[in-house]
Structure formats: C-alpha cells, structure tokens
Length: 542
Image (cartoon, rainbow, N blue to C red; front, side):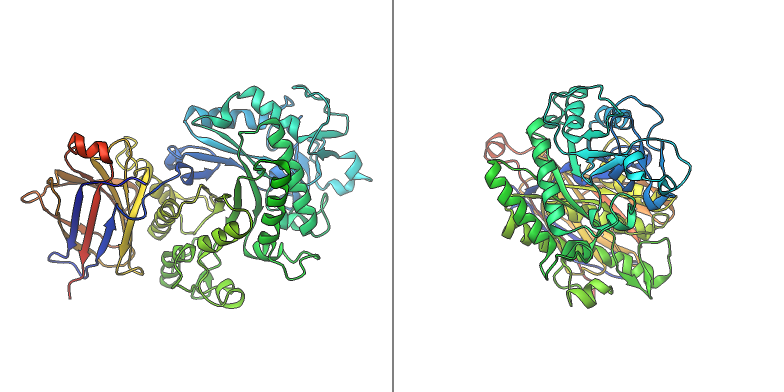
C-alpha cells in the first residue's frame, strides 16, 4: 500500500440555483488498491465508444459448439439448432478467432476466448435448419470434443477424423500469438459459456440437465489441459448465467441442497492441490439484474419513471449491504440485500482462496437513455473500487450510445484518451440513493487526481470546492455526460480562488469527470510515496 505525506481536502458546497447538496468524503490513505484495467471490457468489437476498452470477449452461446479446426458452430436454440458458418466462412483453423485476437492486440487490449467443454462441436457448416433432421445427427453432424489429445500437436488438424482437441486449440493460439499470456495484452481462456443452461440453449448436444459432478470434472479436465500447454494463461470458469445457476446449477439433479459455486470452488481447489499449481484463476459469472421498477425489469429499454429509478439504484446490489432491490432474488432467495460482490468473495475465500473475480456478461438496460449511462458509470466505478479483475458488458439493444458514453467517461472523456486513474481510493457519500462518487490517483502521475461523480436525481446540485492542502490546487477540468448528448462534453475549467476554492454545478441526471491538478510533490515526499490525501466534501444545504 502506498502512503503519502500530502493532504488534500475538497468540499463541494451548494451554490445559488441548486436544489440540493451532498457530502462526499475521499481519503487516499484509506482503501488504496489497484484498479484492474480489465474491468473496462465489452463483448464484441472494440469500436465506437468501446474503442478504448481494455478487454474484449469472444463468448456467448455460439461458442459452446465452436470447432476451431474448420470454424463451424451450432446456433443452438438461438437459431434453429443448425450448424453453419456464422462465426467464419473460412476453413482455415482458428480463423474465427485470429482476426479478433489481432484487433485486440493492436489496441493494447486483452481478449477472453471460449474453450468448449460440453463434449461435442459442430462438424459442418451445412445450415438447412435443425440438425435433428439428420438421422444419427450426433455422430454425423458433430465431432467429439476432448480436453487433451495425448499425442503431438499439429497446426493443421484433420477436420474429418471425428475428434477435436482443446489443448491443441490452445497450442495453436500460443503458436499464432506467442508470448501473449504474460504480455500487456494477454489472451485469457474461458471454460465454455453458461453451462447451467446447456439443456435450454444446446439441447441437441446436451439434452439432460448439467450436474454438479459433470461440470466440476469437465472444468478440471479442461483447465488442466490448458495449463499443461500454456501455464501462464489465466483460466476463467464456470461462467454461470445468473443467480439460480450460482446457487443450484439451474436445479441440477445432484444439487442436494448444496450451493453450486461453493461446491465447484472446493472441487477446483482440491484439484489444484493435487496438480501443484492453480488451475482456475478467475471465478467467472454473468449478471443481468432482475431488479424491477413498477413491475418492469430494468434490463430493457423502458424509461418510465419507476424503471429509471430502479435502474439507477440497481448497481447498489453489487456491494451495498443496506440496499434491498425489488426482485425475486432479494425477496424470495436471500430475503434482503444481495451484496453480490462481497457474497462471491466470501465463497472464494472459504473454498478457493486467491481466486480472482470476473463478471463477463452484464447489462443494466436503458442504453439509449441517460439512466443507462449513469448506471453503467456506476457499475464501472464499483468494479474498480471493489477489486473485480475483469468485466465485459454485453450489448442488449441496438442503441447503446449512453452506455458507450459512460465507458468514455472513464477511458476517453476528453477525446484524447483521458482516463480514470489506475489506483482507487476511498470515496463516500452521505446520499447513496442520490449520488455516487469514485476517486482515483495515477501511479505514474501523482499530480493528477480523477474523480467521477454521479447525480442520480432530476435536480442539479450546485457545489463549491474548498481545498486544504500543503500545496494549492492548480485547477480542474470538467467533463460531463448528460441527457442531451450520449458523448462526453467538456464543461470548462475550474479556477481556484486563493488556491483553495472552486465552484461547480452537477447537472441533473449526469456523469461528471473532474480532473484535478496539484503541484508536483517535493522530491523527498515523492521518495516516500506518491499517494495524495484527498478529502472531498459536498455538504448538504438545508
């Protein structure tokens, strides 16, 4: 942990015209922790507002039956259960992933690849609808997928021998992109996609319910195969689709009242002890909130007041032990606050200590609306502050411009790759419902403090900023995401009065990124540490 001899205090006080004020407290001597850049991830292409994302994921139902030897895949219930060339028309091994890996690395981003562990992958790209029209289709239209080849690898496998080997796929990746596992733009591997839902999404290759024992065994076999080929690569699993998958693997017949994730982590840990090294590095889950407003789930595009209100509060279920959302999970399963991230960390600590945490699909809805942008900005702040290792948003609607704008408020707020810092520090508010705040410093530039403040209310908040610090505040630049535009806009500079006072107004329903500059610390102080003590108060006016 870095400590600092500097002390910085800020107070945002309501100015004339505001309807309310709020108090924030940020202290960089407390809760100092690195922010994993991989929380700024997306499923799909790195373009538009996602251009500066640090992680992309090739995941989803299509990849469960992906055949890397010829790039065939099966659509499952998403489209007629047919085999086709949707992922790539090329028959060159690995073509469906090669361009995506190259594009990610060109942008300095990591990529998460899906390794099928179901047991079968598509053999052909014939299309024509449901494979069950072919008698004996499992043998004729699919190839058996095995974790390990047990023989020398080839980069040009026989696509018609009836078998596909996943360790050979990992070897192909390592050969095509050598050294990626430990690079600044690593390649990660995921143990399939939403195995709890295989009978629903891929009934032709897995008609029966997935069991605890089956998924643990397949996870261990495939993780071992991956690590034997690429020891430095990080492996993600089990990629549960949602809450009922977390706790019961979607009603698995061998559940016997046991929490699935606790069982799975304990099985992985036991295998790791035998293997002598970590096999699964990251507990990977998907999280599409079940929260409702006015009886409507927030993950759609609805913007009725009740839905907007629920959407803006929903990120609190990631961490807040005092908040209970309106959902079947909160009311019927846990009977109170979900506090998802602490809950998952507790499972990890009890069963497989040291495992990282990822949320590789999520969406809070309203992508075309400022409420979706605010919720997304809130979630990114929570992921960074709470120590999540990786996260990748899954676009649900055609227009997600405000979600893209929220990403830019952390990764490109000034149009010149301006970014939130790489180190999170304590930030609190006395109005959790109406506001959120996240603060950061940068390990390479301690004179730059970046704060993201959210106004989740329909009224503006005027504020003044008072600074108490051995060296004066030089100034601040402000950027906003507001309802009138889905892109960040510069809102001018804040000039300190006497080196200690700034005035600022947070617009209604807004994401506000403030870049604060302070003079360089004296060399002796910098030698001790590069952290900065910041006390930021926005005091409520009564």
